[in-house]
Image: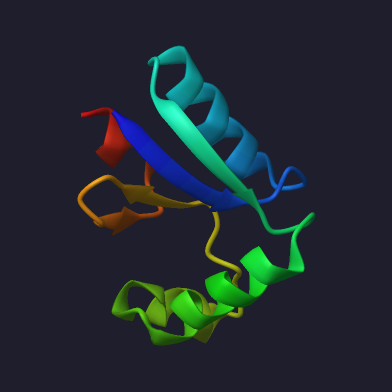
Length: 83
């Protein structure tokens, strides 16, 4: 299985997800928002348009990590990926 993880190396939730996915043998394409302005710009468009981020936006959160599975499904819960 291959997933894209959008997050930051400064975020403990992102680091936790990366570690759990690595332990499970998942192939990861990591988009580090703290290191790439183009990736940040793409992510902000996603965050501003996806319904799954309504609560995050209302609470003033960032909403990372965002995990995008091979079929395009998006989640912020690493446990959904590991099922």
